[in-house]
Amino acid sequence: GKYVDECAPSLLGQSLPADEYEVIYVDDGSTDDTLARLEKIAAQHPNVQVHTRPNSGWPGAPRNMGMSRARGEYIQFVDHDDTLGPEALERLYEFAKRNDADVVLGKMSTTMVRPRRLFRHTVDACTIENDELMQSMSPHKMFRRAFVEEHGLRFPEGPWILEDLLFVSAAYLKAERISILADYPCYYWMKRDDGGNNTQHRFSPRHGFWANCRTIVSQIKDGTEASDDIDALQNRLLHRLYHVEILSRTREPEILREDPAEQRQRFEAARELALTEFPAAVREGLPTVSRLRAELLEHGDFDGAVALAERVREVKARSEVGALRWEGGRLVADVTLDLLRGDGEPLALVERDGKRWLDPELLAGVPGAEDGWEVRDPFRLAYAELVVKDRDREDWWYPEGDLEVRLEPLGEGRSRLVASGRLLLDPERLAGGRPMERGVHDVWAYVQLLGIDRMVRLTGDGTPGAPAAGPALTGGRLALPYWTAGGQLALDVDQRQRRLGPDTADAAAANTGRGRRSLPLPYMAAGAAGAPARTKVTVSSLTLDAELIPAPDGTTAELRLPARLALPAGRHPVTLPKTDTPVAHAVVRDGALLRLEGPAYEPGTGRRLLDSVADNGQVRRVRRRLGR
Image (tube, rainbow, N blue to C red; front, side, top):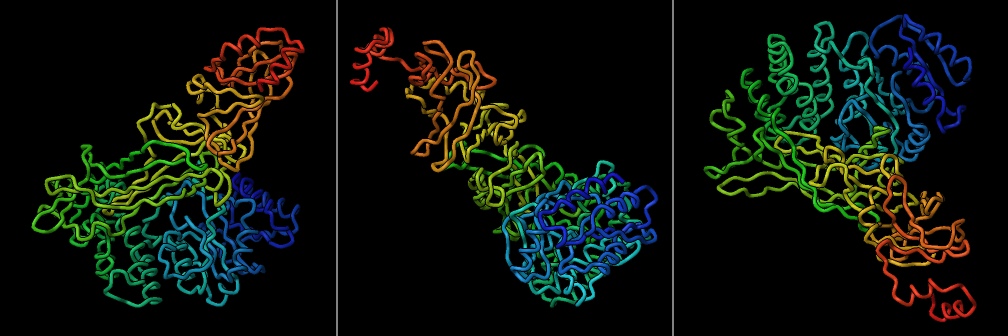
């Protein structure tokens, strides 16, 4: 249907020449006009093939048919309701060839799952030993065709849920070189407006969810060595399956939103699989709260799991943002994150008998946890990171700066885990080493402490809707940080929604500077090597283009007006769009701009006298002698 028409331009408009790649569509027995749409596309594009097959209703068989028809060196899977970035195939192919990769993971932009730190940095080559690969188990990757054929990699066909996990985990285990391209959004995986890409009947008996999990676990075990070490490769790989596919049955929101009888049935199925297929080291390697969930699951304590889920659901992440400022072209602030219980108090660790215990207030009334729960390693799998989201494009980028997790005393034998560090956001390099796109960008944090993970917007104590820091001139564009109506940090690049005028009105009014054709704006930061930006200004009733130029010292910007202005002699207010507050006054005589003055500039007596005298030769000579 319509999703084919939305996807097709992204496939056919690739920067890679059309004679260097083929597009293979497989119609899985569609009953609407999809086949007609595909045949029309193929008739117009020589590099497009269309193949048909009886309906299976599942992606495995169509993907296998596509692989059998492919003739290219590499295969990239694309679902019909997703899109590719314009340069995706060219970049992925060149990257794969340069690194001799069997599998290439291209950066994904998505509304389906939270951003993955796997895509924080580009990695030329790694193997399954990099267990972070298990964060990305969708098939939307590039695979060397010879590698796929050598190992006989195919998707299971028919109603087989988790078919992507089986295929991708097999590829990871067999691959000698895996590359991660993280500096360009290659694949856009978006939630459909009709909900069609949701797996609504995930646990239907005919789909074999639990048996399929068992098959994937067996595949991982067959490809790795068993070990009692919680950090051994096999246990790290199985951790993903245990945490995502098994423990999800015991945690919020799932265990709280389903029919209790059905959820109890899933709980028991998950318990049987956990006990029979997962080594004890997988459970022991979990962080504190996840380990407690696993304990309740494996002991069959459904009521305890529900009670714990209700308590953990109330836990919120809190962000504290220090003073925002521009330093060397980067937006800088100190950031601290922690977790709060439902009553607003910090989620604490309590010291007792030489051990640390999970906050008793969190566990009060939880069956199976009456005696408390020991925190063996508070830093187990704990981490936090900052991410910046492009609102228009759904792209996620990672600013510089790391957040470190530490224990902070609260007094009386209590402490809390906090993650702290510095936000270092460079608008000229954030997007994979390239400038940020024009638009509004929201600053988020992801935090995982004690096995509880949260995504939270960076929130400050600034006035909602007000500037968060002064504007900055960077790379020929204006960057305007501000607090949203909800008090959350956002950055407007190139005046997508915000305007320079309202954000600078108060500071501009206090400017006492005086220049000639240009005037320093001390409230505006700039990169030392930045390019000028153009902005509209109004001088009295005349609207014209002006320039904002980085000052030589790189700490301020200067406003420059044209040398000639079609205005009468006098001192005219200079305003920016959407504000009546002058940022400067233009002194004009005989159509020429003599100088710009700050609104608060107070000329001395001599200046006022000279400006009031007719412009005769004697005065001009005096002015030149005075350097005015």
